Image (cartoon, rainbow, N blue to C red; front, side, top):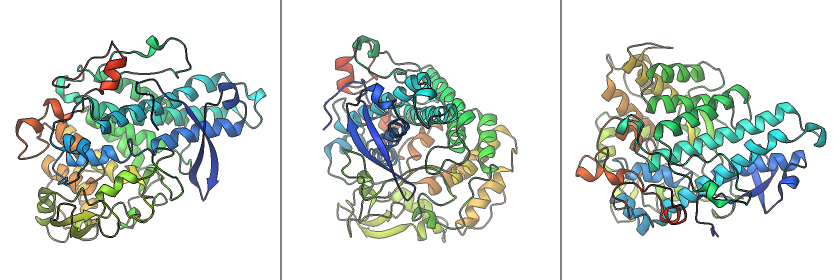
Length: 471
């Protein structure tokens, strides 16, 4: 049960057990720092614990669901009041769903800070099996996960860079683990979006410099490069975005899958750069995290909730060009929870076990980033935008375009990345309404296209500023 309702991180330490190269963890709460850093196994367990926190449906599940139903990809028909508020652009600061995102995000950041701040001080002479090299990798993994979480939080709780060129308020930047003491040190004001982005970039550059190219199912240098490419795209830094995406494409570590079976083959497909791994044995979401939230995307028969089918606008986008395998093979006809005949995605296939993996980063996005950044910059880093888009269209069974413009690239992003949580930010950063019929409430810059700072935070932190129009 979540009992701490402020930004202060609740530190839980986890021990790792290998099982077919997947991350398996057993929680051990309230372990003293000298115990955590006393052996290689407990240090590794604390790092794996950060990955476990990243499995939370509040960090991987709900953001993807919310981002697509706030936009024009999903027709949300669910009955959860907290999700209905968000869908209707009436989100209150007391909304339990966004409260859990905020809390879980800062819990993860606190756990990452524990490694980042304390592990470098541990002497390798005192811990059998610990080397300076694997110390550095552990810290780099923590920095990548901290960056991933800060990026998600700032995208949800702050207007995008385009709103005021990044000078608008972002989120608090927390750099220390909470180990008791003066709570006021954690009652922080929000940094600007530019400052948060700079902090994320610093973490990712450190991770890139240290993480190995191949790190199994854990974060590796390619994942940090890919996330930094996305950050530069969102900031309209086209040259950097194109260059970084090109680095990932040319790294040799990842390849564009020949078909769409990779959704059934997580995390082993070469398509994937970073996957949030869920297993049937992970247990309830409140302990170690499952893909419980992804059941909203599932066909209600046999076992999904049926809350988040394709919107008519997304169906129409696919129907405009017949034969798109991304619809023909990944859309399943069914009746939604509201009794409407529609379609559901099959991108999250393990309905029986609630163990579908979350797709945080995959190589296809790098082609889309490179294409958009090159088009906007008038460059051809790695390849031309037209060639990159046609490569993805060919995999989808579509004919080549003869020319490409921004609308064509954004359409390919929409059809390729639907149900993976990208659509909301793609619309906002391109100054487009989240919904074509949404009016002023869904317009770029509107108060409720972002989330309010949660009431638990504003109650316990006298220094924080609430978002406009929130109460």
